[in-house]
Image (cartoon, one colour):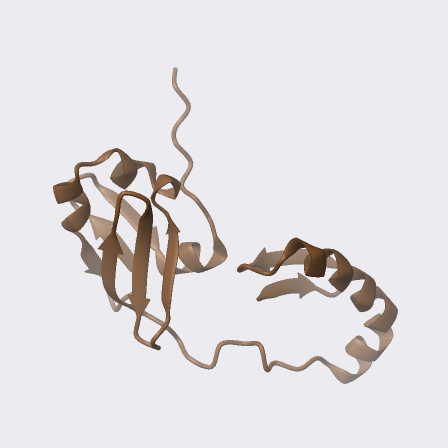
Length: 129
C-alpha cells in the first residue's frame, strides 16, 4: 500500500509497494487529477480497523509485532539501534505501551510506535561527537 497527496502530487508513505508501481502512480494521478478532485477517490484501501500490538517477537534480525486485527508486521532489528545493541534477554523483556500503540524495552530505554513500524520509520542513531 502507498499513499499519495493529490495536490501537489507527492508520495506521502509507502508500505511495501514495489518501485515500478510507485513511479507509474504519479503519472496516472496527473492524467486523472481533474476527475479525482471532482468526484473524490475510493477509500477501499484505507484500513478498516484500528490495529494495536497484541504480542511481540524479537529475533537477531527482526522485530515482529502481532496485531489485534490478525496481521503481523516486521521491521529490521537494526532500525531500532538500542534493542539491536542489546542482549537477547534484554530484547525479550518488552512492554506493550498503553493500549497497544507501541513497544517499550525498559532495560535499554527504547520505545517504538506501531505507527512508525507501519510507516517504515527507523530510529536514527545519534551522531558521534
